[in-house]
Amino acid sequence: MKKHFKKIPFLLLIILQASFLLAILLERFKVIPILIFLVAVAILLFIAYKKMPVHQDERLKQDYFAVAFVVLGAMLTFYLNVYLSLGPVIAAGATGTMASFVPLLNRKANLFKEVPAAAYCGAFVGMSSPTVAGNFLFILLASFVAGLLLVFSKNIFRGFGGKLGTIAFGGVAVAYLLAFLFL
Image 1 (tube, helix red, strand yellow):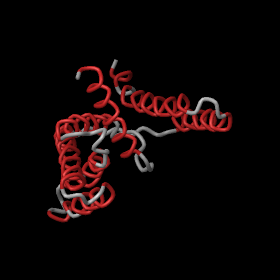
Image 2 (cartoon, one colour):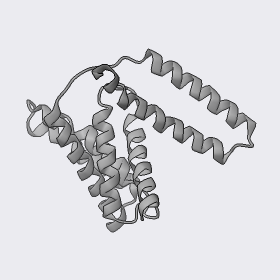
Image 3 (cartoon, helix red, strand yellow):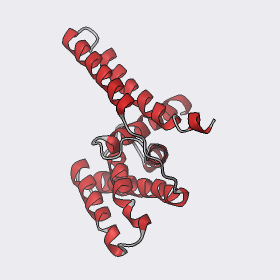
Image 4 (cartoon, helix red, strand yellow):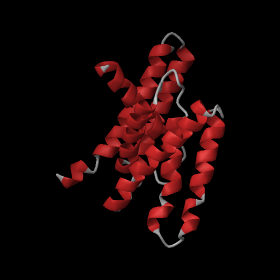
């Protein structure tokens, strides 16, 4: 049972990436080169998933704080982007830069080492367009979901690029789906 439970985050990432590829496919279904490209990407993703190492570590206290840092990073970025009109790139860069200095406050604290990645994941959520994410409540929900996805996938794709952006996309997509279904 525990062995199957550990595969849930991995399956969530697969479903997230597959839904993203499916959305592209449905949008551009009549273009054959894009269809061939998407099939090739899907095959390569499957091969990568089969060969990917899975790391195991459990730090429950740090996991709760990681979710909080994702939420803080998203809120700060959204505020800088929308209310101070800095733009999404500058706002995310400022949030990421501020978060990168947190581990210097106490170099021995393992909790502080988690802050930059979690806050930057939140910065990606906070970069959402105001037409999609109209208020702080949406950003709160999206960043909370992204934080949970980050915690669930902490042992997957260590050292691979694109993980934080994919997780942020998943958080925003799930929040948008929930808002669409229930509001």
